[in-house]
Length: 98
Image (cartoon, rainbow, N blue to C red):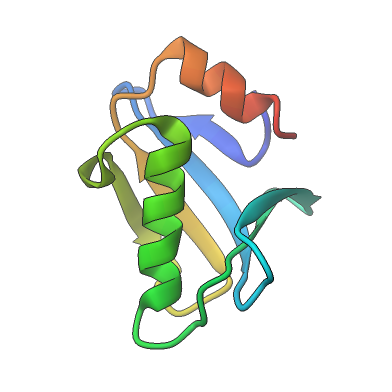
């Protein structure tokens, strides 16, 4: 398993992300140290970037927003996100990113 992607033993995945807000478009970029770099089109104001991150990951994973939780890094570029109900196909799709 990738350094930035970990199974927590309860059927969920924990992602270590490095966020670049105010980008032209929202997309995965590649590895940034031990984290996956993710560009977000949303500005880092009033929680907009965090909300955009949750929405993007939920859409990418084809899961409801309630399955994606920001664990740490609410006001930081370094964030940890938990994705519940992650199956093997989703895990493989995320691993293929980096």
